[in-house]
Length: 150
Image 1 (cartoon, rainbow, N blue to C red):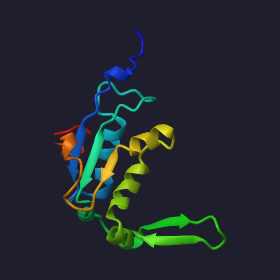
Image 2 (spheres, helix red, strand yellow; image 1 turned 120 degrees about the vertical axis):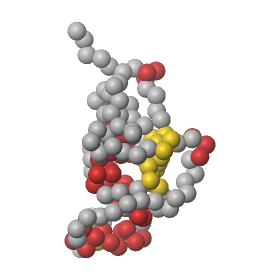
Image 3 (tube, rainbow, N blue to C red; image 1 turned 120 degrees about the horizontal axis):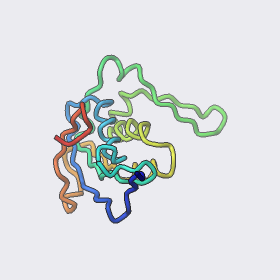
């Protein structure tokens, strides 16, 4: 028996619309990462991008458990001496809520060219509006148990 490898003609990408309002950040990010990689599809092939496009709305209303808004810090360095900065999750969520979701999902994707290609299929918006109506995204409620659309 040979191992199945998906062909480019077999890959069918859907557009999924996720409402992040009230959802826990980490659990939401894992399900989005599974959809971007295509792991919930039967044609999943590790070395090919078989995943779907994901549009996330209401990123500003994502739920954070415990004391993460105060305790969690994001690190950035300019590569100049003394250029290190630490920013709290609360500050980033207030100014750029889309970056919080994007960074959580990016950490769960492969750190290769393939992972960067998968991340380009993620579109995150702070409010309920998005410019992707022409693609007709289907509403998707992530199933935390399976990673499949319910």
